[in-house]
Image 1: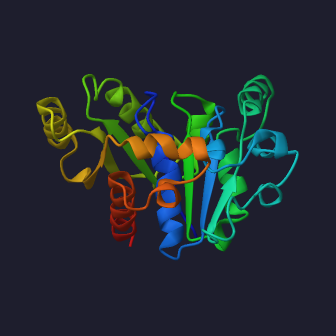
Image 2: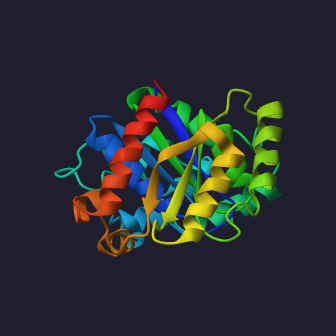
Image 3: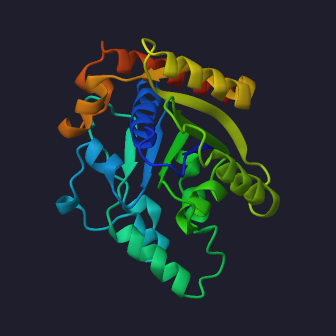
Length: 259
């Protein structure tokens, strides 16, 4: 049965999608059959793996509205270079699906994604959910479906802004919707060891989250920023870059923590 990890932060620009794509890639390269679910209407995880919107007939929005089953929309971005990585794509239609779900009296609307995942969970080792940067019905679905949360936090000013609110939401979900939900870890992103600010913010993050902070930090890295424009994970774009080495290290830590 797959271990389901939702990657979330209500702040945008913290490296959430970059982490989702590259963690999924390195889990797959380590021999785990891995499914990445793009659950952000921006669709950046899909395009970041080279899956173009014009080639899609159905996306996760159709699953959320009960029109198709999850297994019918799963695609394989690159069978030759990463044969164990699979993707559930999305596009801006997911935002419309959320509006429809809120407008209609859909039973168990917080568990739609969970039920969809349960139908395929036995076929995968890991399922990674890239959630949108907001506290919404979609985000609640992503948390309700997960075993674990991974929280990227950028090592910049205002890094912990909004985190307290997010953690309150997580606690509410644990109380009423998903009591087994666990915080897998906090990931420091955009870390620049040359600046005192990054070091100070990392120290503050560790003071706040203690042993939940991953040993791995994700550096500011030009190659990481370039990879999505080529439609590939960093491990395919430049596997010797600092960003690639960092995400490979993160995948090792994740596998160790969920044992």
